[in-house]
Image (cartoon, rainbow, N blue to C red; front, top):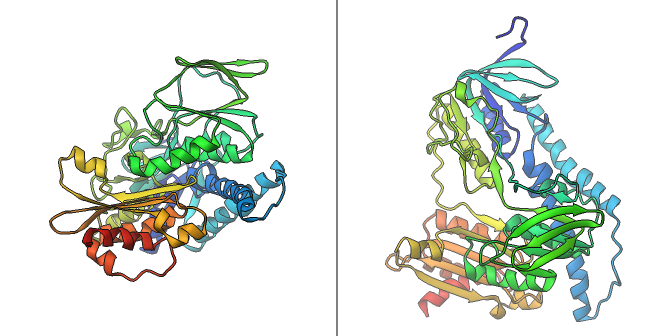
Length: 460
């Protein structure tokens, strides 16, 4: 420790102000623990609020409005051609969506007496971190929670150009490119691809596997794939981008086996990686593996008794709600309460049009594990509510244990799937039977009836 260092002593130091970090901090404070949050940007909300979940969903709402206006022509309403003004759009996203939520989080932290320190944290040992930046100091703690999240993964060999964007840059909507290349057909690429397609870009998606949304149930992906085929200029599966170079007129990309095409911008959407570089873990007993991931037990404890880790730094699924739950578990354990991250169902949602959502066991996982299951499906073409919405392309799918009838997994594709999956997650987490769903009266006409209908099909 350098002579003259400002030293702050607290019960808990939370490193990272994202959903896992602020959830941990808020719960620690509620349990009477003096808590400080250290965040490089001196902000709460993390990438989820500023560069991920929230701004992307705001823009997807804009895309949905544009699509609805176009679809309205089918039933005799014509709003005319939309006029898109980027400055008001960016201002609305930044101030009325992201800014409002950020101010709310800051208010909660203040009300709970939580100090938020700006700067980069580096462990000096298992009970101290040094903070760089504008507020240099040393914080000594009884316990620390690492919640530094993740950053967009990069592809080697790409030119350093503003025309080559990661998801963070794409969400700024600097312009609406005439032609956009999206490298990666996962949820980030498809969500942002649909945003730009709605705004007027001709979008080309290149995915190295044989299908969009790799790893997701193919029954759920099919309706989305059909929608993307109509929205995008081209989708290349089993394909790679061999090279990318910037020219005076834009970006030239060589698509393996398909020649060279010109684009105005490129979006690299090949996943995310844990942000653990430079944390100084070597000065503690906690360790990150080759991928930067920190191993934790069911109580979110690392190999160092004083240090916990939550969220994306602990691996898949890299989801904000998983991070929040882990943050609360870590806080409870630090406070000496019995708690564990033992959730059976962690729902996942892809907020495309149509939305795709699932939780629990999937059919593909059951096949890999050699586990016998019953599958129940309900096509939304038979749903009255879906028909009134003009969206009969959805599907609800249940995975059920054949002996006990217990609900093991739920998958939904269609408008509002992200909201509907909550019932599925509750049913799986509570170990309900398919019969329980079938016997639960669902309001008519609603999309939620599809869960009841799928369950009923097992007994007819």
